[in-house]
Image 1 (spheres, one colour):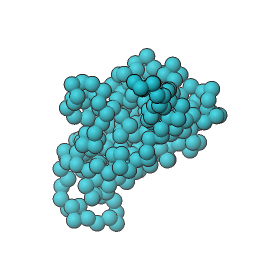
Image 2: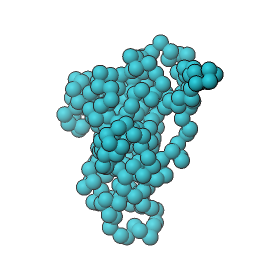
Image 3: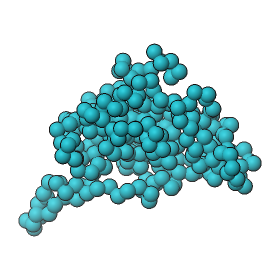
Amino acid sequence: GGGGGGETIGGGKRALCASGLMDSGPIITQVSKEEVNSPLQEKGVQNQTSSKKPRNRSIFQSLLCCLCHDNSEPIPVNNNAPLLVEENGSVTKSTVRYLLPEIKPQDASKICVVIDLDETLVHSSFKPVSNADFIIPVEIDGVMHQVYVLKRPHVDEFLRRMGELFECVLFTASLAKYADPVADLLDKWGAFRARLFRESCVFHRGNYVKDLSRLGRDLTRIIIVDNSPASYVFHPDNALNSRATPYINIKDWNDDG
C-alpha cells in the first residue's frame, strides 16, 4: 500500500516526488521502523559499519538516493498525444510523458488492472520467520539485511489468471531494490506487463499516491487493487480495496484457509 512519506509539500497539491522525498520513507511501505532493531547481516558480507548498531531512523531515511530517477528507465513519451495549437496558429504535438509504454496489440481490448504489492500480494518483515516463501537480501547503509516475505494464500492462482484476463501492472510505493526481486520470484507467469515503484508515485499530504491519470490508459478502463485508500485517493471510483475483497482478504498470513 501507499505509506506515509513525511511532511505535506506544495500546499496539498499533487506535487511529483522530488528525489529527497523519495529517499526519506521506509524501504517497504508496510514494515514498521521498530522491526529493524535486530537486522541480520548476510553471511560472508563484511563492512566496517556492521559492528555498529544501526540507527532506526537513518536505516530508512538515509539510503535510498540510488532508487530515484537516476537509476530508473526513462518514462516513455506518448506518441499519440493530442495536438496543441500555439498562439501564432502553429500546431505542435504535446510531449505528455506517461508512466506506461504504449499498450501491446494483444492487450488492446483488456482492462488495465493496477495491483499493489505489500499487504495485497505479500507481507514482508525484517523479523525472521520460519515459513517465509522468499528471503530477499537488501543493502542498507552498507549493511546487508534479510527481508522475509510471505505470499498471500492463493496468490499464484490469482496472478496466473489475472495475467490471462487483464493488462496487469505492478504499482508499489516500496523501493525497487526490494520490490523488484520480490516480483521476480512472485510473478512466474509474466502477468505484470510493467512494474512501477516509489519514484512513479505522487507525494501528496504525507502519502505516496498512485496517480492513475499518469499511466497513459483510459481511466474508465483502469482498476486498482490496493489495501490502502491513500494510494488511490485521486481515483477512489477505480479502486478495489484488497482488505474488503473476500477473494484476497486474509485475516492471518499463516492461515491458508
